Image 1: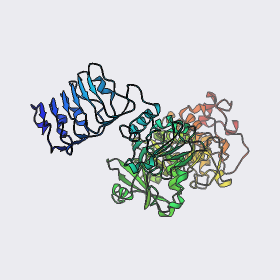
Image 2: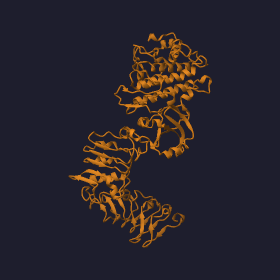
Image 3: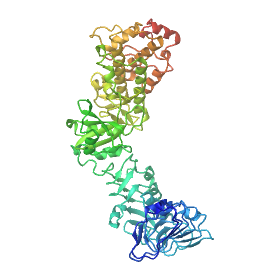
Image 4: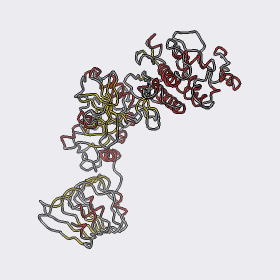
Length: 628
């Protein structure tokens, strides 16, 4: 009722025997200046936090002594007129906030007979202050012992004011519980998994301040409710041998600890995460947790997935291994939910996709927003309004199903995909080879910005590894070396990229630019037209500049599909060529389905790069590729 009485400025309810409960919330918005709720009796009295009085803007006097109030003293007060604050004989805990020392109107304060900790407060001499019978570290004014200070910082990160382990004193190694073990006055073991015995279940984050306990050998934080990543700085603890953070809600990148450290985090992502998967024995959870970074990715239950997809009502697409549905998150954001078919439910593609895409953050890589592994395996992605690129390349609404994209949009898409590949190959901490670049796996937003999706076949390797063993991809886009030697590298993605771009520009102009019969190898037709100087788009009235854009894209993708992987440009070089001038691109050799002993891709300093005179000849088709 207090906020409904704007003229009320004095509330005196002292020395009652039956008043109890929390302080009324309406006090916070009231105009009360004098509040006396003190001495409510031994058995009764107000309890809980005193944070409500911190928001009282006109408060000048607050007598709350003789109650059962707990929690910490608020860090700041809204009133600049507070002169008399009586808090003695309660159960207040934690540190005395420094803000109390700076209250300009404060004249009297009593903190006696509480459970306050830390250094003895230092009030100005003109303030009448008392603080007897608390758990301050020492009896005189001065800083706490460094180890005590570290524990205050650690427990603050858990949302706990004060230090429930110390019970007063300036030495963590005396009068402590079984949670702490010391040697020669230094903490060597901290077992906060036992905290539940003391009604101490930790919430919040793991503080980097643990790293200041340099003598620590064993650190056990299992069985709590901790969130966020493990601090990287914990890897610097010189004597650490055991770190147990299992059975928490931690997420994010796992730092690389020295080999001597025994690490225990089998359920790091969320407690019980993999208990209900279709075939949990094949998910290799420990290996996944060691590598993965899932900090922005949320786990959903199967019931959540059913609700967001409206019981799988609207299907966006279907492939051999998955079905994609349109859905909405609880906040209304549209998403796409990919349900992996039961036939692939051993979880390997699911783990690959989570492992790979969780390492990425790039405008040309689709964002993974969540996942589910309960009853059905599902991946939840940002919704791409234009769908996949194949719908535009094979547009059934146009004559002969030709590509419906204009030249500038095709160029934008080609550059965007190349930038995404360059990020995967060079921009990540670990190199990621996608192994399934094709139109179906390129998604487009409202502005036709392309995003690479579907990392189910992706491989992760260190940057100093040139090639890996493996087989993967889609026929028609797979690089020759995968068939031949079962060797994959980032150059395998470059080949797939080249075939994708050829598919895009070829379908746009094949029926309109004099393409030959179907028996001719598709890249051969494009190469021959390019070499003969034919206008690739002679059925359309376009400018020379627009025609040059198509020629540039064509030349780049022909370099990308060279038989030998070493002849193909890197993804970074592809971006450079696409964003550069036509004259800067060397004329490609004719791609072949068989290996040839030919020179490799020329470097930027090579004399084989085209000069301006040669470029003009190139446009007319008067130069043969063997001139380079």
